[in-house]
Length: 173
Image (cartoon, rainbow, N blue to C red; front, top):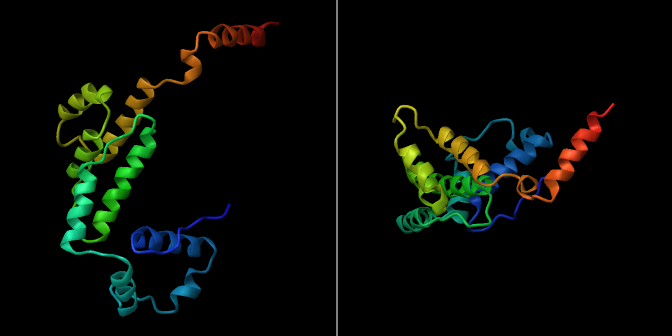
């Protein structure tokens, strides 16, 4: 299985650098490319590469933060993809030095949900602060989504009798 990495451009430095390192480690080439003495983050080479390929000024932070807070889950988007999209946006903000708390992350991932999740969000709001973590929210979102969108075969009345007959025939002696 080969890892596909987008070419480095002005918008993907943070993801590109992590994926490139992962690919080189996986192929056993990281030690060769990194040299004998590891360069600390912020070395002249890495700083130069970052400054060329990653904008990090106030305008960039504001634009990315605005995009983060305006994110909305699409009707046909899976919950896993929605969570990943929000994580990616948070990652991009943190990569340019913006501070994003877990509370901000939870707010974005829950406020961008479809109206069918309103009751679910109210139950999250009632959760004790000490118990409310980003991981808990993600796990409960996935559970709630699976309850709201059961497998199609369970909703299709034409398939239920066939499935029941197959189960009976399988256990017949």
